[in-house]
Image (cartoon, rainbow, N blue to C red; front, side, top):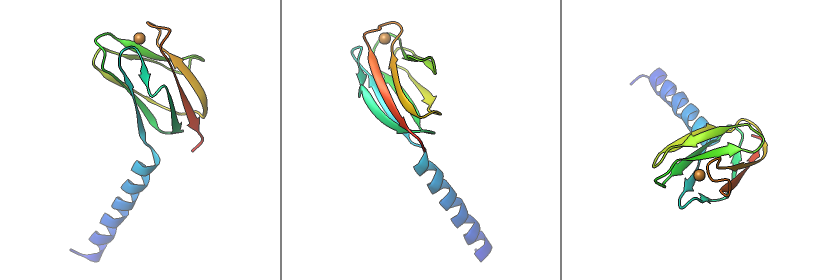
Length: 106
Ligand SMILES: [Cu+2]
């Protein structure tokens, strides 16, 4: 293998390492009509994944309207977090279900 090839591979590995470390996926499980954990932390650019383990659909709906994610029964759904702040959300079908995400600037 030529040294140019080695260099190219190293650049690729560095780039991959950089970006996967910067953007995380934060999982929130929905089980028994509860978001777990109810409060979670993230950075701008991260993705939150809601994993619905219930047999009924739920939503993760931001109070201020930034996002409204429907999570089907036994399915998962994602949302990229593009703004910093404290985001309170709830389920439109079961308004007692509440969660929040504290999103820090990247
Ligand atoms: Cu619900």
